[in-house]
Length: 253
Image (cartoon, rainbow, N blue to C red; front, top):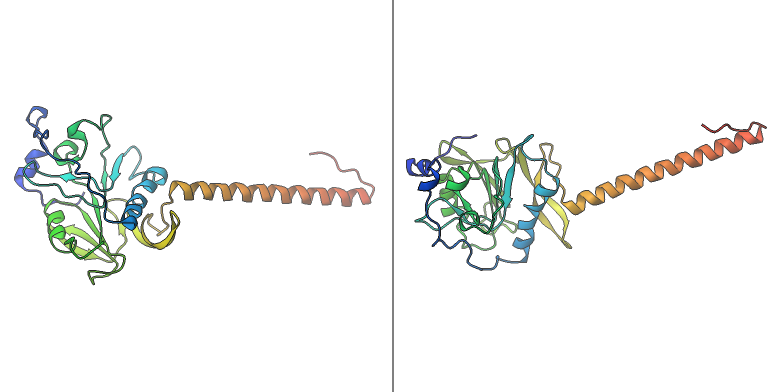
């Protein structure tokens, strides 16, 4: 895993004994505020659902946790960061999600920050390229991704950053080697809307399909196999007919 910039205090919080874990009873883990807009809501779903329906994960036996619009708490004295989407490797959600300490991503519960966070720019007030860039680097997030669909920040539609010695360095690589997954722009239809979307992908750039896309792919493969079988049957029938014209009765296989 890439080196992080966690402070001594943060590192200590990640190794506390259970009886010393921070009390979270008074923390606001959900504020009932709506998401920014319909596009962001769809984009968030597209960054979570395919991972659970089609991605095998970072490796055999290695779990992961991905979600959208969920608070990432690094301190009980500071408000959480709420990325549009995040991916954390080698952790998994606990069974009792209604427990207060399980409702959000608490560093001290999961023992580590997420590997990837994604912010979708919906206006010019989110500070994605300023304050959030500094905050995520300070928390040791290995990869920070800014998706700016209509280039409102004038920095490009897609910007990817990798943490190096505590500072984010922009990269042109869509493959995120420390996470074992990549990100790419994809023009197509999702939930009835044709747009340029941000999609997870494998190393060759092939997007990781949604559950619906994978079902359609399997349906198409089954249909192609049915057509091949039908063509083979028709070929066998034609051959049998030709043999009969020669006075030869074909034998069943």
